[in-house]
Length: 392
Image (cartoon, rainbow, N blue to C red; front, side):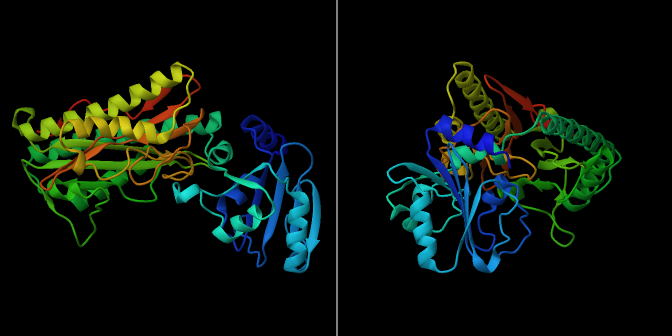
């Protein structure tokens, strides 16, 4: 935990303080921001108030007075719930804004770590509770230069593994070998591992209508054959095998046949998805270049608008993208005004996916790249796909 960084963020956002609290590990964001051991098991409530200026105050139960001793500031011990309420009333700045892991109307469930009753309690002391959604991003989603470089390396390794797989599939098809989703998935996972990727989960390989399920995953017992004339979706992700490395996450489309054999409908849908992807990227780039902060929901609207205008809106069944960090789905702003309304900003030194899709009953199409957000521009990783790849 770096107190000066938290207080600087509070001052810049005009917030009087940040009240962290937890009961039995519910508030994972608090543990991450404060640098606490997330595996530690505390049986009693604790609170830690960081004012915009001045020293923090920890409130811990007499049953567990050792809790939070590693954090800077004053420690106060309570025995009864009445004492806890009195102490909270004393340390909180009545009439001012205090951030908590709370999301109005549960608009962003990823940030909603504090229960409604606790929010009611804090409000009873005359405090205006505001969401820590944006401010917490600075500590759970912003990447170091070393982490950004790890994302770039993971991206290059993933694309190299994809290229190696496509070359192998071409050779197999030319030789007349039989292919199926599961065996191709397992080979792809081996290629990713060979390239230097830490493969915790196998990639998605989905043909035709299977690709219409965005999270379809073939298994050893459930899979479909891959035959000439099939459209195949490849969704693959991973990170380099080192501490605090950042994921890369991409989706490509391929056709089992020649370029001339790709059906017109598939070409049309791919073009719509590609334009939705590129329009979203261009929007973010334009806004940042103009010095404007961009909220995740606005990017989703831009991307979704392209697909809706083309008449496929009802077949775009998920958000446009998600935050990426040390987990494939990170804790920062998502590109979403569909599943949730994510009003968090895309902050510099964060990463997110852009992955619009159209999922018709007969086939699904998705195109996914990642964005590294810089102060006044974006960096696209994942070699944006410009056309469906013919495998014959």
